[in-house]
Length: 299
Image 1 (cartoon, rainbow, N blue to C red):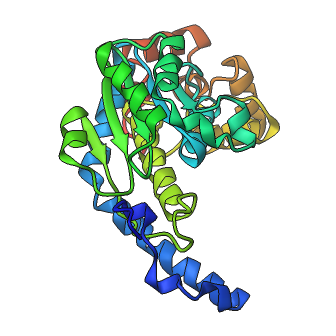
Image 2: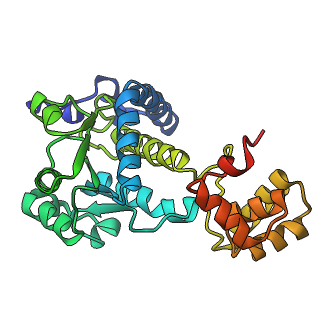
Image 3: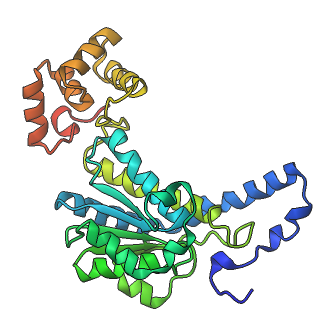
């Protein structure tokens, strides 16, 4: 292959995949996937730096904005969409921008990624500024839409990062505040970056946002105490969190949750300290919403 990008190289271990049985294909895919976590782990310092940049943006009133195309863009939108119900954050706080817009989420819009000016325009629509952190996702490292968006982000003073699964050149490293490059190796189907590169991307984004939410006090122990009680499943989870941490029966947990306006964190303080909603909210506000600042260590 003439392409130097790692994501476009042929994989010698899968060159006869078309002759394998279903079980052999399964074993081959699984063996390749085992390499992903190690590759992501080798980028631990860069991932931690991206987490710090996200937290810095949030504390300054800014946002984390993912920009990508195809699978990369969809994974960014997915990660962003999961933050409000899980951690109770404003949907504007973490956003995913995908080349081709909403239509590209459900049907490929391959040509949409070819225009850097479209990436810049997408950030202009969101009024990106110096308080934001923009993370471009392009596993091949070359997507014009992403580069155009990041160029505009730098022009307006935003912090920027780049996530790719091939070797970053020096120009890329120097241009951004952080570059994350898990080298997962050639795909089983040459160039099909929805596979190992996509899995690596999901792992990286999970770590960045989960870690950022922990550092912002959205977690107590390892419990998601800022979840939004918006469905039966989350109502049940909220009640179980209160049953476990406050030491009450389900009926009392439900009363606390109702009395808190559906806010698990507030209900937790109410139950542990025997105070009303307003007092619980006041105490949490004094410590920027960090439950351990009011109640101490969960253990």
